[in-house]
Length: 213
Ligand SMILES: CC(C)(COP(=O)(O)OP(=O)(O)OC[C@H]1O[C@@H](n2cnc3c(N)ncnc32)[C@H](O)[C@@H]1OP(=O)(O)O)[C@@H](O)C(=O)NCCC(=O)NCCS
Image (cartoon, rainbow, N blue to C red; front, side, top):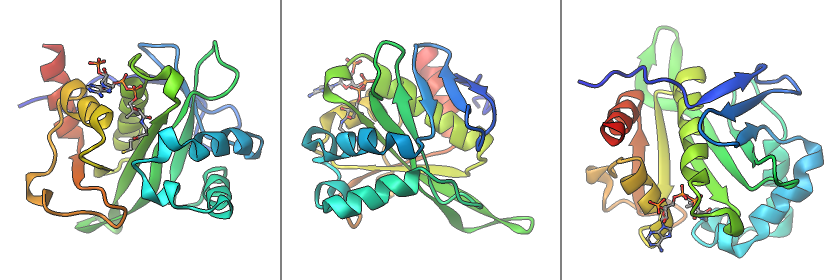
């Protein structure tokens, strides 16, 4: 049995909602911070790049107006949270090198803890093409998983992908050591994604300890 309390991969600076809030990676120079209105052009540049959105029909088939609406939604926080996206920043680059976080946060069907409905999240990740293959996707997603599971107390983080998306499969299966949900193999989500990972504290800690042993 693996411990579910593996050390966090980030150091939090401030608290969610503070203007200076960020997550600093403990293993690379990456920093994750929620976007503000000033970041809208950077977000749109990332979302409009076909190399980033081609496997995500919710973005690749969206109009400019819809992309602006999505980007604007990411610049404000609701209570309770319904999404939380981060810009992935690197000290050597003025513009963010990617986006990662939860495009959806909501009730986890069927599980009640006390008076509160337990919550789940759907994670997403994009790294700008020039910055890929350097481990930044792995590091940023690990920070997102840890923050979601430990700080936001999400019971489960779902990540959908397309089986043709080799880099994402390599990242999840080879680098994280996480397996897709067997029972959901024939299920395809509304955007054509046919792979689903359901990440919990236990599964992540188990996978990471196996990778590190
Ligand atoms: C998926 C994505 C986030 C990965 O980001 P990244 O920073 O390159 O990720 P990492 O460097 O941490 O790991 C990627 C791994 O896949 C491997 N990889 C990438 N392309 C590959 C290919 N065609 N064949 C085999 N392995 C491949 C890399 O070599 C690396 O593994 P390694 O470090 O063992 O060599 C990035 O490719 C991306 O932004 N894609 C577009 C957006 C997207 O599809 N997001 C996922 C939606 S669910």
